[in-house]
Image (tube, rainbow, N blue to C red; front, side, top):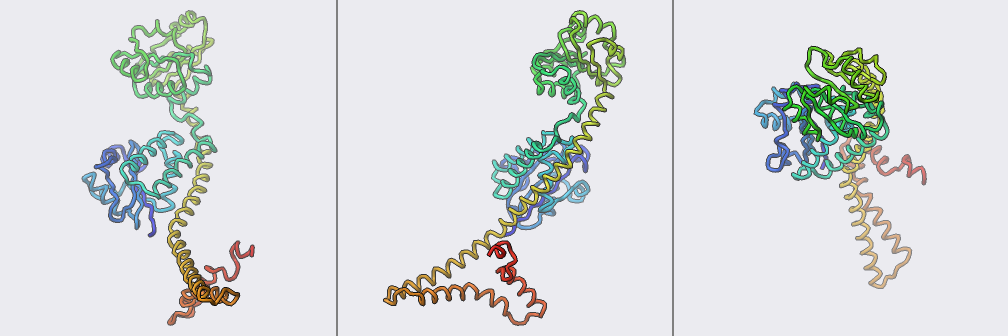
Length: 429
């Protein structure tokens, strides 16, 4: 039976966040509440539902786009007409290519970000655990994971910072090298600060101190990252402890001025300090850049780094796409061979049955005293040849065909049986 691969989805490029929320399937990925059960034309299914994308991948006995759309719209208490403007669809090779691209983060909001691979692995585990993954999905998803690994090993697509917070931490690493011996301070407790804290921890920072005007919010963020919170009033007296300061407050006036930092440097005996000001308006007086052993970057400096790095990632993405194209061909060959396997097995079985029948006849002649000799073997061999060729000959001699139809059949049979010795095997012989 032929296998078809269908994928439908929407993502950050095709749908706004409210649409993505409306058609989210994150609540329909568990046993007993699986959105795309394996029945009717569907044999296998996988659901990937994240904040940036919702996708359904299905293996079936036919192209499943319309069927999947209908089921999805029904789950969301909506209609196909409402869902359709936001949808992309891929079929067979294009579906394979899309999954490989998603796994390799070529299709992500942030090119090269690693989170999507973990989300895809989780979606696959859900499919396996709920009994909705079979031979083809298993092979396809494991292949997508190996493609992602190959892309990361053979390209530098994830090598450069492409978010402001990540770029800030990467700059700090260049200045201080080993981060495990250094402390960092976050001034502000918003989203930028939280992302910076996450990247600092991944870089191996020794300790994170959070300073915020609302101490309660500072404590909440510090607890997330096993750090400690300090009240805003103790900012200046705590600064000498830290080497890296990332500010992202909503203050309309600078919160750190030249004289503040001069005094802090004296206490630190001029040990270097790295300031990253990602607030708008800026939190730090730019005059502190005049001081020795002070490194100050603002959001414009970081944007320049991000843009350069994004350009570098896009160049690496072109290399990744070539790898993906190679792997799509490889998987497609496997799928085609899988679809032809039953016919191949039937052909082998047919030949084996004919041979077994003729061997049995020959053995009976021997047991009846006729003995085994060249003539007996030739009779057996000729009978096998005659029976193996009977159906192809009848196929060629069928009556009522046009001249073009007959020529087409002759060409097909000559190719199938390599009568003109055109295959590699024929050339070797």
